[in-house]
Image 1: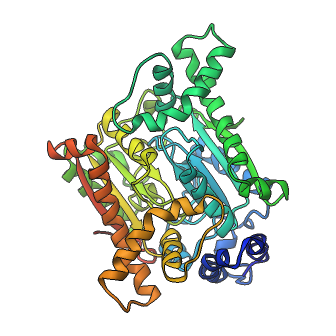
Image 2 (image 1 turned 90 degrees about the horizontal axis):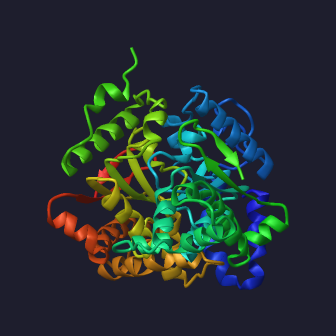
Length: 251
Length: 211
């Protein structure tokens, strides 16, 4: 068991013994690909660099991978049988991405990472209001030792466009309204601040405001993420992906 | 010579069956270590809009990125991922519906996987009365009745057997939930426009097996 897992396990023992139970089998899994296995490439990158030890290193690694993707130099690493077998006993993703379901924005591709590096939560509109989404992110930082959480929005997001239409009186069928609902107040906020913008011009600032809102929602959700951010164990950032250039810009 | 995705694309799949065949062919390449050289230059073309041929509802697990295991490039898969790949939340249903309503996808695949941590959490909740901190309980909650159903149907299962069977039962439950809770999807399936299937990913072999 890594010391990081131990610390995180202990954070919650004070809340009652019952919470330790689901951690135990997972901790066993993590030990299988932990720090005391020197030959394991689960602790190295495709280029042989060590796995990120903190949020800053994790972010640096993601941005370096994104530059390879942007420049058509992608390595598409760690997608082979060797890597699969290493990971069969457990995962230790260094980062969590909360991104959009959009087919043009697969995090593993745009950050040029392979199997086992990124824990990826994707829903249309990358919002973090629903406890279900928050819980998925918390699962990774709590049980898997991820040191970075990135909310990743993107240019031309259909869910944001839907929210702009809805703020203008349109309504969506079925459950699509549930996807758009948390984005509507974000759009209204942008629209109030910049009333001169047309519906089309609203898209880009709303995409960015929606990322910022999700970062805030994650940090205020129920204390679990905020606690790790405050103690310096976790870094939380927002970013936007540009469809044509392929670049990820921090917000 | 490198095989490119353009060489095998031959236009988008016209039916759910064609879409499924394309995914399974991609998975066979992944298993065999013969992945295609995907064209990232499609970025410019895709900036104007996406037309993904399939929707994947999968798990957030870092070992199961759909684009990698189905060997598909940018713009081909609309991917919804939440820990435990459940389809109870309106947010998840709405994300799937978004692709069907606006993007013309022909196939929806619910993709579970061996060694799923959310399933392990639900099994621990059932067998040890364990509870999870923060909002993690919200992720596990829809899986708990699935695990209970498996345990009741076949008594005397070891925790490992219970976890293994629950992965597949959870996929089947999500398939049933999608058609029961999404009238939009049910209607498209009824009309023969969209195909809905469940599948399980095997961690060591890389194989995707229909459930």
